[in-house]
Image (cartoon, rainbow, N blue to C red; front, side, top):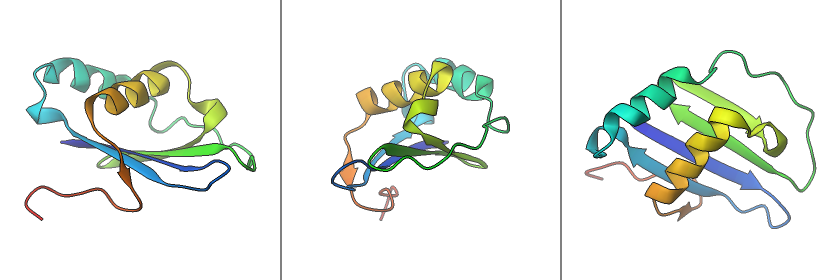
Length: 99
């Protein structure tokens, strides 16, 4: 199971992508618990905010897009954890193992 966080926008409009293979983590059960507690289907719409970051968080089959100001609580915990675990990749799609 992979968790992918993409951050785009900001003044420069750069996209950074972080990817974590949850099953390979020594604290896999903690990751799974956090992912299961996320309100994947309860994210309210947010108006566009120029020059602010937008986060696309994906853990198939779930995916959400959050404005920077919506990144609170468990969403913020997840993004911080992913960013601490994986190195960012510039640009589009994340690397897939074996490719």
